[in-house]
Image (cartoon, rainbow, N blue to C red):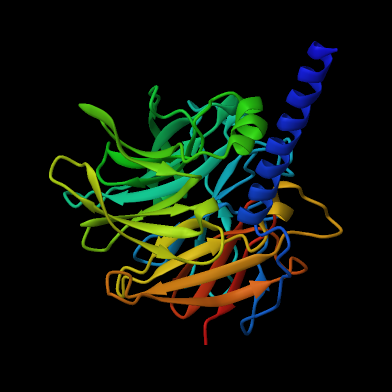
Length: 356
C-alpha cells in the first residue's frame, strides 16, 4: 500500500506541475486575449504569396525581399519547396516576382525562415543571407543577388554546432552575422513539447565569422527577430514569450552588452528598422496560443507595433495595425517604404496598406 500511495502522490504532484506549466504558457501566449480590429486605409492582399511571407527586408532602392513557404513547428504548410520573392515598392502594380534559384542549389529541401541583406560598400554587390531548415535542421545560405536577371547565385552554406535552432539573422559583413536560436534542443519532439512546457530562458544570440563563432547573448524565452540600428552600434532582439525587445550594444570584439529592455506588451516576432528615422517595426502575434494551436474557424490574428525613440528614456510603443485573423492570419513582420506598410505572415498571405 505504501508503494501505491507513493505512486499516487507522485502522479498528483506531476499533474499539478504540468497544470502550472500549461497555465503559465497560456498566460505568456495571451490565450484569453480578445482580438480587435484597427485597420489602415487602402489595404490590398498581394498576389503570388498564398503560403506565407515570414520575413521581409528592403533594399534602399525600395526592392523588398520576401521568404515564403516556411515549414516550422507544425504550422500549416504545403509540400512545395520554399521560395524567395522580390517586390518593387516603387511599381504601382505591386506584383511580387519569384527569384530564379541557381542550379547548383538543393531547391527541393529549401525551407527559408529569417533573411537579411548586406550591401558590400566596396563594390555595391548585394548579398542575401537566408536561414534554411532542410530536414528540420538549421543552416545559413549565402547568395549574391543579380538584379538584371532577378536571380540568386549560391555562394556557400554555413553550418555550425552553435547554429542549431536558428530563427532570424542580421548580416554585418559579406561573411559575418548575428543569429538567434529560439530553442535549446535540436530534436523536433523536444522542441515542440518538452522545452515549451519546461519554459526556461534558454534562447540565445550567436555571432558568426569565418574566424570566430561564439555565443554573445543569452537568457531569452524565445529569441526571435534580430536587427541592427542604422549607425550599426546596437543590435535589437525580440523575445516572443517575454513580450519585449532587447537593446544591446556592439563591442569591438563583436560581443553584445544589454543596454535596456523595452516592454511591448504583446508577443513579438521579426524586427525591421527604418534606415532614416531608426524606428522599429515589429510583426506581433496578439494571441500566440491560437497560432501554435491553429484552428481555421478561430484563426490567429495579426498586430503591427511601431517603436519610436527606442534609445530615449521613454520609447513610444504604438499599435499601428490590428486584425482578428479574418483578413490576415499570423503577422510575423512589417516594414515601410514610400508611405506604405508591407506586412508578412508565417503561413498566410501578405498585405500592403497606406500608412496615412
